[in-house]
Amino acid sequence: QVQLVESGGGLVQPGGSLRLSCAASGSDFSFYSMGWYRQAPGKERELVAVTFTFSPVSTKYGDNVKGRFTVSRDNGSNTMYLQMNSLKPEDTAIYYCNAVTLAPGQREDYWGQGTQVTVSS
Image (cartoon, rainbow, N blue to C red; front, top):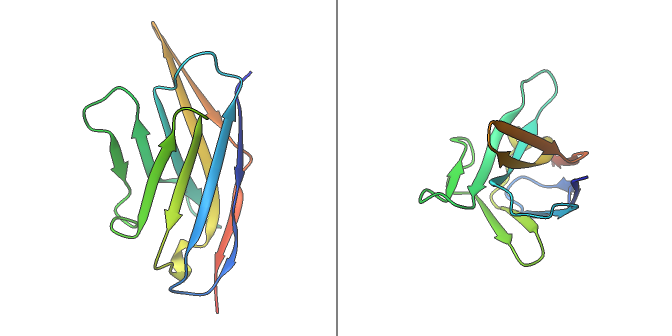
């Protein structure tokens, strides 16, 4: 069973930085993709960043974070990171790690429990 565990959330002032981590375990094969999503109170979950393991287009960012956030992966340890710089109050949300596996005719999405990021002075 795939498990995703996020860490690194917390309270930060506007303009500050945070680094989130997502450790994946329980998969015997590479994920098709790993990514970060976020959900603020009263809003729908939205894409933050996603990395594709086997695609020529390796990374995609949500429009709201382009140029400020950077996603990276350590495939050897199945760990993904999200470096968040120049944080804004509107970045406040629960951040979720996502991993996707693909098999013929089947897609499985896995989610972490989420980590709270609060940007406030």
